[in-house]
Amino acid sequence: MIFFPRKLRLALCRFLFLFPSVYFTFSPFFPGPEIGTNYGRYGSNLGGGSVIGINYGRYGSNLPPPESLPSLVNSLSIKHVKTFDMDPRITKSFANTGITLSLCIPNDKIPSLSTNLTEAESIIRNFVLPYHKNTIITSISVGNEVSLLPQFSTHLVSAMVNVHRAIKRYRLHKKIKVSTTHSLAILSRRFPPSTAIFHKSISESVLKPLIRFLQRTNSPLMVNVYPYLAYKQSFPSIPLDFALFQPMNSLKRRKYTDPYSGIAYTNLFDIMLDSVDSAVKSLGLPKIPVVVSEIGWPSIGDPGEVAANLENARVFNQRLIEHLRRGLSKVPVYIFALFDEDQKTGAAVEKHWGLLYGNGSRKFDLNISPPI
Ligand SMILES: *[C@@H]1O[C@H](CO)[C@@H](O)[C@H](O)[C@H]1NC(C)=O
Ligand SMILES: *[C@@H]1O[C@H](CO)[C@@H](O)[C@H](O)[C@H]1NC(C)=O
Image (cartoon, rainbow, N blue to C red; front, top):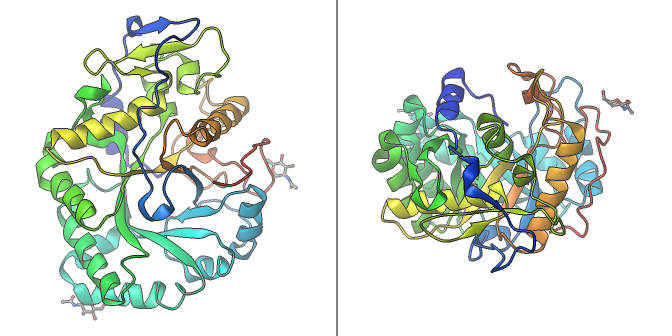
């Protein structure tokens, strides 16, 4: 998870799911079609279908050196890594490992990239060209969660266009997709999912041209999807089990049926994904492949955040993997995150999203193999 600027956090809180619990029904035998509404999503250059990757954030005081990452990532049976920068040490460390890498251009480069093609070319020349033959680079995110920050968002699409041009100049555009990550705070209405829309302030000015660019370049829309935050912010209306993917064999499976689409959901993740699809549709644009650039569950929170615990973090991640493996949602996801990050500021919860402690040891057992 990113450092949400305080303002953005407040925005996020304001656009909670309004989840009257009356919408939920128990359905002991769960009759009718099993959800699976997200079929048709595919991962573009990530290979199609479900993919499980991991975010590599580095705000930890004692993290293992980049050179030891491939073996750590391999030990988790993960084959896809997303970083928040373009550090050559990291890019080099994944050479000849078969592990794919998603890179990120820092936010503060966006304004100059939007007008300076030469700068875009120099970034690609310096940070991609020397490494791409040995390291599989699949995508570059131009900034991280900037679409609601006007100082960046007004320059965002032009910056992406220039980065794409630079990549094309070096004939890498078929291999490396250009996108940018969004927080779900870009939605002003999320619920029911079929009625979701983007924020008025950015829908026509930023998101419409942005999604058109992605469609033109056959690149995915990247969104950070946090069922934990939606659960926390609308407590107690969303049942915890619904946020944690309910066990398949539970006799008490709940479902929520969207009153307009008639689609039945058994978990919050699918609702959040479909709300993104609906918002895209509301712009009059065709469906676009989505990549979940961040998703996870924290193992420790601030006092009162009881759902943030080790067992829930294990259960969420394990069931997410099973959900994707069963093909109910065909979408590439990058789990947040590889490590706990003790140097993150703000709420305690920010520091505890790792599958691994900062020192590289496992927090809980997770069964990912065989890798997808
Ligand atoms: C554009 O970027 C290049 C390479 O970083 C730099 O040398 C040049 O000064 C920039 N041009 C402008 C107008 O800022
Ligand atoms: C790693 O850190 C965790 C949490 O602080 C601790 O419980 C564990 O003992 C540490 N492992 C090693 C090998 O130092």
